Image 1 (spheres, rainbow, N blue to C red):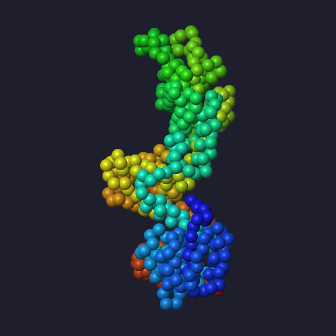
Image 2 (cartoon, one colour):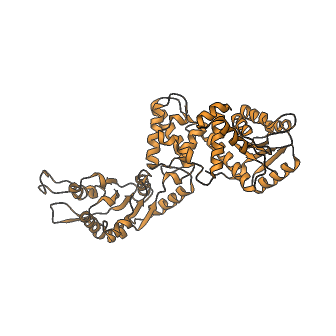
Image 3 (cartoon, rainbow, N blue to C red):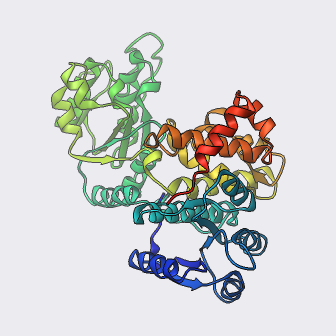
Length: 450
């Protein structure tokens, strides 16, 4: 998740004029609006008069320390993030900063890239916090029934608009749970056939022996149990649209019959020798790679090209960025209202886990998870322990595999010490090492940078 620096306001607090000048220059060049203060007293005055997104403060300053400023911000400005910088790095300082409420701890000297990365991480966490504390039910961006404002989804909206303006066949692709039927409905109801029938058919959910009869209908006596003639889905959709979901599940024999309908615009009921003209627009969808199936001989190439006149690809949820937050709030508002309870909100760490999770079931999975959380969560805030087990550990993977082993070890030791409030005996027990080994590791971590 990233944010634009255009409107983000940052306060830098440091008793070193040189440091203030350098940081102000670098952050201003990156597009942030920057304020500076040489001490905590001046910083408090600025905080009282300006709405700030991030405070970057030095640790050691005359009279009042940076830790005191961190505590002041946390107690009085819930909508402002805090980041600590220092030229005297130590594990104890890092632990104290984190315990006081600083989201980032940066040791001098640091590169411009390290500074901007830390600032971005802190602002991303602020964005999560604001989302977590936003009032459920607040207006979210929607388009033709979709909730989302990511660049990937804006491309989908453009494709839907173009598809809706034509009568061409459309192939909708995407993973299971991404919203393929929703795209088909938006395409139908956004076009000239909107007042005509829309008939959805799940090809994978109908037994192969019955699929032809369901699609094209049958005459009386066509097969055992056919006590009367019955029209099929294509007849029901005449003048409108038929949506063939999971079209890849059709057998090769059934594919030939569908191809004939596409070519001739006629359907022949099972047991009949007469064809009937139908005016039906076909929208098809699949979660499989049709071209790959064509290469394997499992899907007819001529049918593929007939279906693939216009293609709409729906991105997986994991590629939709902040849309995850918008959808989560939409679903929590929806299910809270259905349950007759006050709307729940998310802790920022719970939102981090939602953002880090891979979502193999996409929007459908997210909806099911949120429904479960609304039912099972006792309090008004959804915390990480409330999440399904797989999601609780997704945050551990969010930083990727680019850090050194020493960096990972130092961070883990710092987290363990913080969890036991700096008690080295308990920390050593938790880490599975003795106190001497822990002291040696802390000594290496506490070497001051030149």
